[in-house]
Length: 272
Image (cartoon, rainbow, N blue to C red; front, side, top):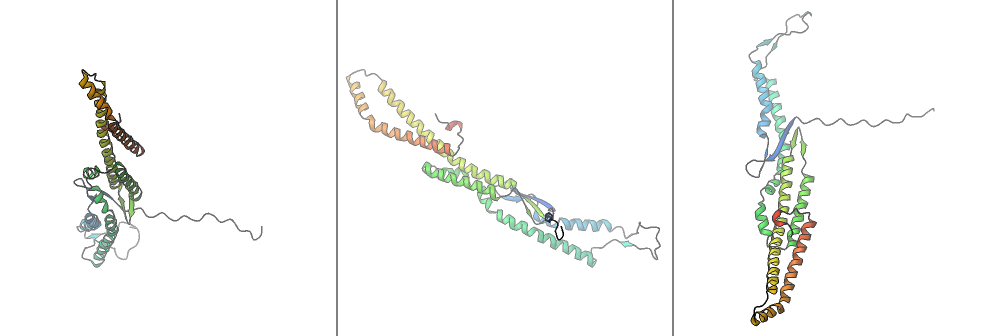
């Protein structure tokens, strides 16, 4: 058809970004809860310069290099290629350019590490001290703190990447991410354990109280005095049983709370 236009093809894809030249890993230090790089940044910055200097030093022993290509062509004079000297202006300028480029390249890495620095404070949290601080609080208050730690863990899983392209570097942060996530999980589990342990101890006391009551009521009186004592004991049981029932209800509520938080009970915390 006259005047018809061919349908437009798909838009050309943008070229992929260049692959990073270097890979670094940010990881918890083996001694103490701090962050460190797998390689010293100063060593990384000077590496290309050391390679450059080594290349210059390698060629210093060859004063002249004769061309070995196009040997059948006529040359009015034989060209020679002299080995460069580090004092030459162009060589020195090239070295300065490499140094400036590497200095510029590591600055984004430093800024990224500064952004990760607050995670060191998380790794330094003493879980046992936090749990002890919360032991005297109510189970509901402890559960609120637990939910906060679970939310922090989820936030770290989302915000801290496994690796990140930072300029010409790939910065691998997976181990830091796992360590921080594990710390928040440890805190949440520690608080849940405090609820479970406290509830189990109180439940054991309630069970012993019931056992003592049943043993006292089952014991046949040997004389009139023991019969009178048994009647007086039974008459005063009502407020005791009400208090024990309230403790049982609280224990059941605590276990229901832990079940809702998907807490995994230890052998010493199993409900009986």
